[in-house]
Image 1 (cartoon, chains in turn yellow, purple):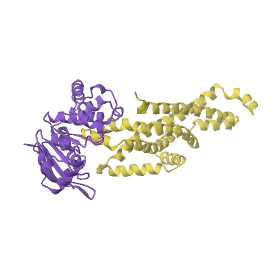
Image 2 (image 1 turned 120 degrees about the vertical axis):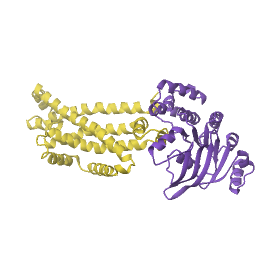
Image 3 (image 1 turned 120 degrees about the horizontal axis):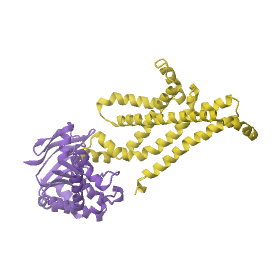
Image 4 (image 1 turned 180 degrees about the horizontal axis):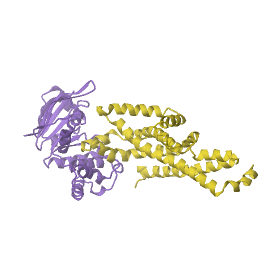
Length: 229
Length: 245
């Protein structure tokens, strides 16, 4: 087996193949970054919306809850196909990468909104009442008091979600997005040993997710108030 | 003119009536203390006055002007005149002592930072916390946090200060440091409405004492009237019980 690997290696690690692999890795990373950034911002908006008690926002809140509860329960792969068939008639020249990214944003928004919501709810009610009586409006209460304290409850699971999500983007290969997993399949189809093709993919997934996990651990420590000073 | 005038104020949580028509008033510079058993509605009254619990009936006037608790503008104006200190201090855990005191005047009232910091330095010195500007609330004892909370309330230069059982959550030896701080404030002519179980303190600093029970005012009088010759049976019972201990 190892003989075969050694034999194939010079053919595998050519300039073109390496660039191809790196481009695929960039697509995986790009989809994750866009998905998690959009998901975090939209998730934050949904979480804040769900906290409001204003009767005018009730219809929006109902829609938000329905969306979050639905999209957290549909398998990611199914969402990708739904987006594929829903978007293609509307945007004929939407690339597969765009379609996968939209699907990713839809799912990450639903999950991250729950993570953010748990964080917002972890801030004691007294903190909010204190702000109210000092004449902080809702936005200032959120910005100055709630978010800074919710942060350390939000970050660890949010980063864990992003790390997990790097792997889940592999499902985009099912609709033909040339990301890491798809590139592995292509190499195998071209006759390379699966161990070599997917081995390279494995290493790249690790290189993408490990620094992110480390960042999570670092931020967790930094945000822990008992170690602040 | 009566500084704080509360008439027939009623409040309920769901179907449970907590305040059943409370009437009381405070003249400018008066220190009015609310006493009474737990659950008699003292804290709810203070929460209703600052608009944290919406009253269901009644009227509140501050310096003659009626407060409309359903109007955001009216409540905002009310809160600029009236500050509250809570039993659990409610200091912002993510900010230093200095920031806790300066944040509302600088970001809400938009006053110049240097001016507010000078005021905060003075206030923190007045409550004996000048050495702790850069500490975070969790690094302080309860009594220290409560003194910072008092400084934070004063930084808004309120005309009326509400104190809700500010010593109840403290270790016994920390109670006096907070009471000393309040005692000094009473000498400065700020109108105060305080809920307290420290009867000897209430007796010493109050100009008037209001006895509450079951969501209503039972009796109002000077400290000596309430403590030495209460006219109502319920007051006699409560005061007798407390003073015995």
